[in-house]
Image 1: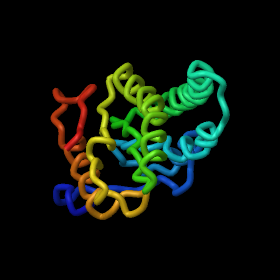
Image 2 (image 1 turned 180 degrees about the vertical axis):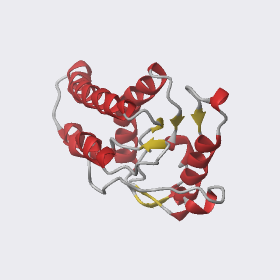
Image 3 (image 1 turned 90 degrees about the vertical axis):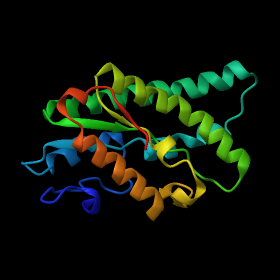
Length: 183
């Protein structure tokens, strides 16, 4: 990240590996006092924890969708409350989608991508409703080479993400709002 920022700019990583949406308020408390911007990338671990729903038996498509809607509704409530806490900091914040994992099994990849579309819909709607910029990690990390393993970005993917974050940080005030950063 620091390699793509202008000279004299600083970046701090306050995220904790394995944390979920409910952990963000504690992370915000560790934010450096002089920080001007936030980039919020959360929800992937929540999705992983809820992924057992894909193994549940359903007697109809409607029943299967109802199971997914339950997950989506819980996610939406938690995500919205978390973004309230982010906005309460008074800092400009970009919101990131959850990238589509690169599982080697094509069927698992397709199913998780379809299920994640429901959660990413929550994220994009929340970003646009609040007038927040969106960094679309699904589009940025669209190649297998963008991943070191099925759920973590590679150096190549990390570079793409860092460039998108830098573009958000360098956007002029009149460009702020619901912009999408996908390159």
